[in-house]
Image (cartoon, rainbow, N blue to C red; front, side):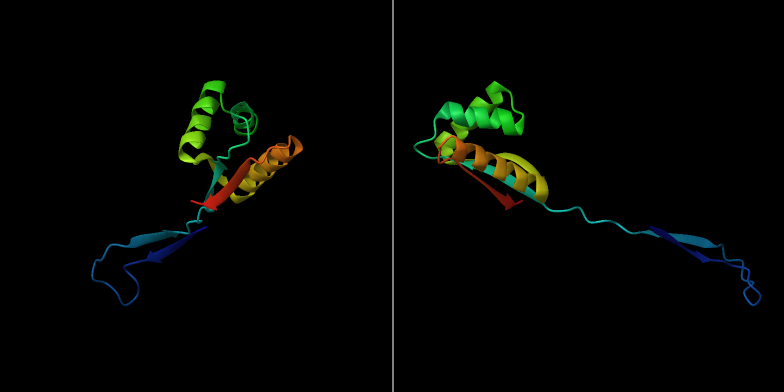
Length: 113
């Protein structure tokens, strides 16, 4: 919401020739914090399963998913996306549930950016 403040010259007692100035203030809404969703490496989850998870839940192409899976494999962890809290929480829950249903120990976490 914007509020206008007006200063006007030329009132009853003010005759010095000042020009009026309009000051405008705007209220800025703060953006909500973003959260990084990360996949962690383990020694048991098949690489193809990780690729499938990245394609299915993060909308990656096969090539993108394969490259990111290799990053997870080599570095131990990789950021797979940055989202609002609610979306990040949902993605983590979906991945964890999917991995459990397929009996894989794949871990997916989120942390504030």
